[in-house]
Length: 342
Image (cartoon, rainbow, N blue to C red):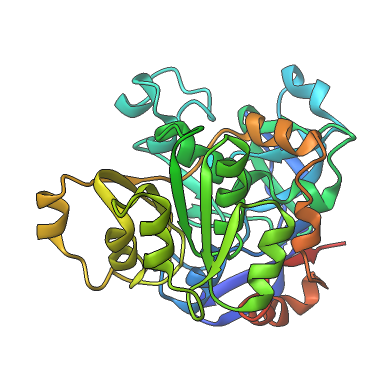
């Protein structure tokens, strides 16, 4: 059987490149050669053990690649195409004749038989190749380069926040956390016409986020964030606060900044329970809490193709697959790290 190199996590902080078998394809699958992948906060939470999952597992779910083999002739038009893919493998992905209740109700991202690329029970993109469902593929136009395409998945997640809670002109949106995801969330809110106050830690992150066009950028260390939000909203509070800090204390800060009957959108997936959660405040002020996860890949690709969101500037380092341990360690220190398997 043919093999390929893949970075396999066997225990928290124990990851190594090994040769793994290249499995035969099911009729609903395609084989993708990975051209570029990138590290996100979820990868780091899995690597550290803060977000438990079944091991061993090949991590990675932000990628761009080329289809090199298909399992069924109906999918032959995909051969040679540059693609990315939805990370949720579902009943619909597998073309099952009797999908689960969630899939029947039009919620495949919550499929009751779901596996998740590089996160839960499905090998990910920190490898030379990967097998994915053909139904999950999205073709990439030439206008979207590889260093932009690895942002399709997180940008789709950023867009999803405002698919669930629409915002526009007249709305004040606070985004807490200007890391890999928070910067994209702020950029999307700004492009939807909202007044955005983007709050971050560390001047380097703040400067990089500002280059994306994210509205007014504040430092949690040097600015009176609460005062600025109150001043912007006649002392009421923000209409929407997006919590993307990646830290357990982020929710408490979000609740302090949102207005009565406002909405807090939760994006943090660090695997650590929230601290300082004031349930009484939520009830008394009738605050809506919205969990938000995966989003529309097509919309993300269209936004990138317009050419006015320079996400590629967020990548600070690129490491070969053989240096996956260093790539993960550096991703804890710098803004965005890419991994090149070839």
